[in-house]
Length: 281
Length: 282
Image (cartoon, rainbow over all chains, first blue to last red; front, side, top):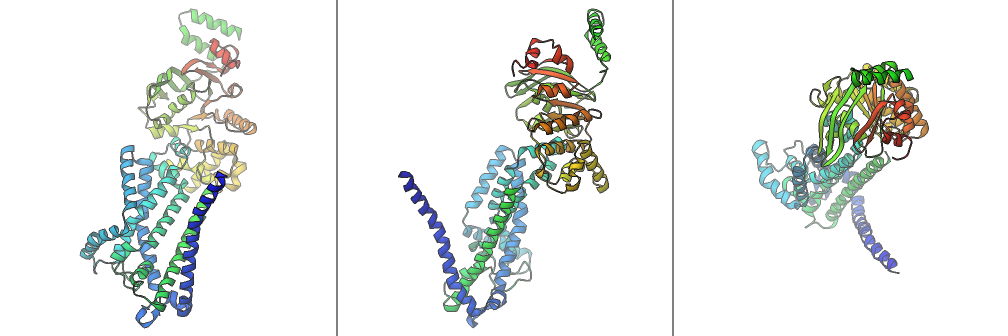
């Protein structure tokens, strides 16, 4: 009897999250799809002009902006994050390791607006000094996002590295390989599916980030031609204009959310595919 | 045989002492052989636990030496001391001398070169999660072999030496994890042979395998001793009897007795050895 009650309780809790996802989907598609249809899907996705005042809604610059910013974050965050994970897992002694780990955990807990503030006060002025433009740029957004994805990448990759059987490492040592070679040529390749998963999760984190990006990216709805120019992401597009948008403009912003949602779904599917492959081998 | 024993006794009584007597006995059995590796007065502690107590033992070149004894007697620990895998154990303290070709293995030989010269095959097969080819090529690549043709040659020869070339020659690029347990263990032997070691350590390398795979590996060890000095830890006394030339019996961290395998099994000197080989404990 008691067990039955617990079942219902847990079931209801589980249902809430599923229900939330379903409702979000429903809301997004119900409001976004008609707008997309009205604008015309090709014009919406591949139009390079975003001019709500003239009822022109092409989000191609924002799609490209999101991809650029995310790619930049990955270029900066992945090498740093992976080397940190390898260091924590295989090189650092107990004391340094626990100190660094709490640092990484703290990094994960910092609100994104604080990252944005940090970028605005430090990264943007630095870029303004050293490069052409106002500093509010693709590069600034990539740097800030590169730091923001670190906790995800480090934690997931470190878990994957820690899970590599000791026998692989010892087998390599027993062949006369150095510690470094054993780690980089045997342990890291053995953890590759977990490392890929870490990167994909980092991509997911980067593409969805809004506040920090809005604060440092400049937000011009134009495809940038250099990393020192401003860029607007899909998330920034929504948050900047939602406050005053109405009618088709509002619909176009929600449709931007639909496109973002599809990107996140693809990333999730990729993550699951990698995870399944890793578990099978 | 009796004659030899009589002569040994005479020699023991005489001025020549034990050394000469043993040499006489070895010569009689055609076992005159130099030591490839030796441990002399070896004491090993894990923290405050005294694992090996004043062990002295010679490992004759191009022969198979078996280390036997009940679980926890220190035989695997001794094996790991020979290629310094014990370095990985925190709080492990090694005192005494370990020699390879008369050189101090802990001071005169860099650890990576010691491990190249003294290969090890573990209890559980541990092929790397990569292709069969890459597994075997890992060692040579580690030691600087880059040339493709040369690597191909080493891989083929090592797999032939491990008696599995014909089984895997058509799937060298397939993952090693797809092999059966027995094949994986022979692959690990091939991988160890690919760096051209001088000594091969087998740490209960058949205990996780089925009888047919075990028989194959035993046969292989018989072949390998033509070129390599083999030192094996085994729980299986019949295996020691079948495969080894020399046997050392360990109990609670002490080496109770060592000698030609036949003697250890048929006429052990120490009653504890006699009890163990007769299956009365362990």
